[in-house]
Image (cartoon, rainbow over all chains, first blue to last red; front, side, top):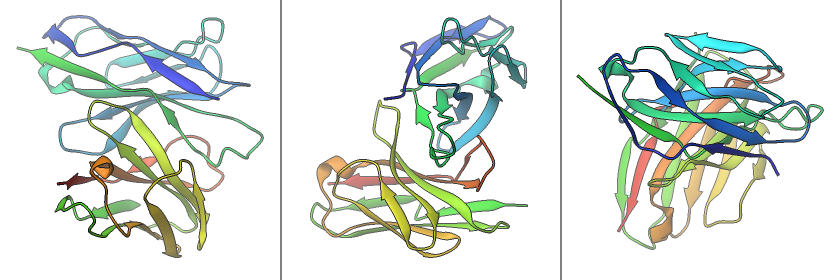
Length: 116
Length: 113
């Protein structure tokens, strides 16, 4: 079945440091890929997405590129802020001829803490 | 604009007691609806999804059930809670036919003692 694997956390960085959170996936066909963010005590919010190979999703200074050859969708940000402290989830949505019903398969999440 | 609400936000229940978590969506029609659970230190697990009134699909066998009595209402229930039911429950919706993005509610934190 489909699966998503994220790098183990927690990740602790100083403000303005470079961030990479690795994400790899296993899926048949051509899934869509997502990064969601969960701030403390809140639900999940979509951060960015990519729907086909070589697409780059970007939002709020975060970027991720859909790499089919390495089945990866790594999240990056050039300069993190304290306000970026949250849990980050990588997810995929299978494109199974319309029968996936929009279900998302999530990775285990990576806790990011940014210190001033 | 569309909004999604879950309640209660926090719940502490004894083992063996019943459960009812409610989720409603406003500002849209015929959404796909989902219940996810986030256990401590783990990722999100899809529990149920629904593509229409009365249509429920279960992803994993468990002690929980779901119902959709109205188009924009999704309820998660249990007759007798187990300790392992503790977690953070998230409801989500998606426009039918629109690939991708799910919109999540604020979540309901359940502690079973």
